[in-house]
Image: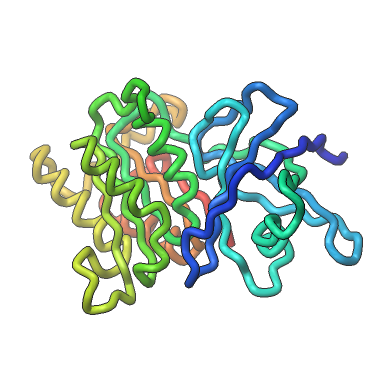
Amino acid sequence: MARETVTARLEQKICISEVAQCYHFDFAIDSMEHFHFAPGQFVSAVAADQNGKQQTRAYSIASAPRANHFDLCVNRVENGFFSNHLADLTDLPPGATIQIHGPHGHFVLHEPITDSILIATGTGVAPMRGYAQWLFPEGGPDRSQGKDIWLVYGTRHETDIYYHEEFEALDAKHPNFHYLPTLSRSLDSWTGLRGYVQDHVSRIIQERAAKLGRKLPEAPVDPSIPPNELNFDIYAYICGLNFMVSSVRETLTNFGWHRKQIVFERYD
């Protein structure tokens, strides 16, 4: 059965990386006063290709809820129908529209909020931006409850760091938000972190354990506890390509983390 779609109108499109051909989109759904979704969820965009065949593509929402708006972060992919369809929207008359259905997905923050490590590569940062906006809203109440929130964001090159200034501003304003961009193929001029995200995730876990006086790996969770009653004081949220997600999950498992502490979404 086909899902019911709604019309989303493009309000703004910004190229946030000329080199990577990455675009930020701000859409509005005029038929709704409020578009309700949980940060981390995705929408599915629907359109007919040049052969008249209906194509559907899922995109993580790159914002927290705000009235009837939602944001997307999309890389142009060579020969990719939907990424090019979206990237070319401004070639159409003002107010270009797309059809979407959603929101969908369970890649959402566990509540109550705990210490959390947000781990992303590439456009996997989109749901992390939604988390950050919801936890630390501009002009609104801080929802982080004082918990430490780390954003470990890995890319190859400095030109591929999306929303860099936004995350730097959050880091400067909120002492419990820790922004850690890391490059795997950095130029000599790069003064920030280098290497892969799992390296820096390991350091966070080790430093936190030392601060709390804990030994690593942690003792295994009592198997008699029902899964729905498991409570942890820290979670990891991972979004990116499968290889990175698998590598980080293995890193966390080696530190004694339970699989229920590791929330992930892959987009390949």
